[in-house]
Image (cartoon, rainbow, N blue to C red; front, side, top):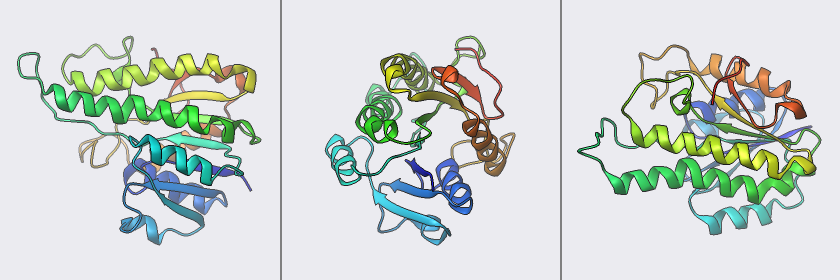
Length: 227
């Protein structure tokens, strides 16, 4: 039975990843900040274990990695993320909030990737997946604004492309995904697709990842995206 690790598993895309993989017979290690009140996550069926984790707390990350040390992780999904304040302009920028978004969206996934890479390396599938956004693409998004979110995800893309080179000798496949514009709390009700469609598409693409895909940026439907 393969194992998947999912951060930010108590809502939105993370919750749907947990639901679909749990229903498909995978062992799911789901994390959220408050495991005492996980909400809908507690009602999902399958082999799901929930752990408390603040992804920006490096001591918690290290402890969980130690607690799970014998466990091989086939697919690790860096999903937890925040948007930050919307509508910030160059003249009216919340720099404190910008720092926090970078801690959650860029630094935390890198810490998690480096810390849990040994768990991924000892698995059969060896896949490290990161949820990013097309808003971070220099080639595919020509719009302005939303500097905080865009820059944090662009930095995530860059560090994961670099990390893919760092772990090539360990045969870990590092990939970055745009989940689509999804109807979640972050995406809003006007978004293009529902969360079931987004996650189902990403699951199909993840299942087909091969070593030559490491360091690439994908849309949820498996098509390649420009950096």
